[in-house]
Image (cartoon, rainbow, N blue to C red):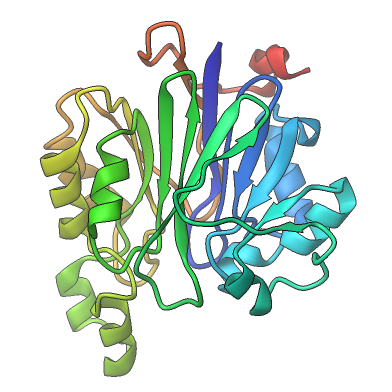
Amino acid sequence: MALYFTSLNSGSNGNCYYVGTKTDAVLIDVGLSCRETEKRMKQLGLHMKTVKAIFVSHEHGDHIKGVSTLANKYSLPVYITAKTAKNGPRLISHLARHFNATDAIAIGDLLITPFVKFHDAADPHSFMISYKGICIGVLTDIGNVCKEVIHYFKQCHAVFLEANYDVLMLENGKYPLHLKNRIRGGLGHLSNTEALDLFVTHRSPALSHLLLSHLSKENNSPEMVEDLFKQHANGTNIVIASRYQSTNVFSISSDNNESIASKIQQPAQLGLFD
């Protein structure tokens, strides 16, 4: 068996990450519309019938835009903290399931472990999804690299890791000072250099995929980020999670915890999800 993962979209215009097996999957955030989420999954050969739950990291619009509509349409439980639920999304009270940090939640054969992070939201959390020894982290919207982030990052075989901004591009850019300070002030986002330091210093030898996520449109460059991290890849597959389209579907086999040939170029190649 294998664990499959993809970014359906990543950026301030919407975030949504898919992680699952052939039979059970979860979405981490739904910052796309319901229709766009369905469209992108179909393009990848993924099916909503496999999705068994939605997990919400925090209440900002680029993470919750489609949560209510998608959850109601498919009667999906929405795992969300009580504080986050008070601030949105709406219309999901009958589907809401509250969680506590570090208490793992079983969704089929998956185990989802939430953990706290620093971000300017009511009760923000990141997540690690585990299956038969494989661990995949979703670590975006992180104000700084705290001990929780390091602890879970070290365990991962694949990670969606924020690399939001280049320090000089942000400093010299057009954003007003108060917004620059929000982004870099410890409760905003990780810079490229902060993300790189986490990767180089704390990666597991088993880390096969690093999906660099939530890149700023104005204060970063996908080409620059890819080049920076590939210089230090040391065998890890470096992927840029786009703000305009999905990534390929990647997979890691539970048989030996090594990455298998995993780029899915056409939906027809994903017959195992039919």
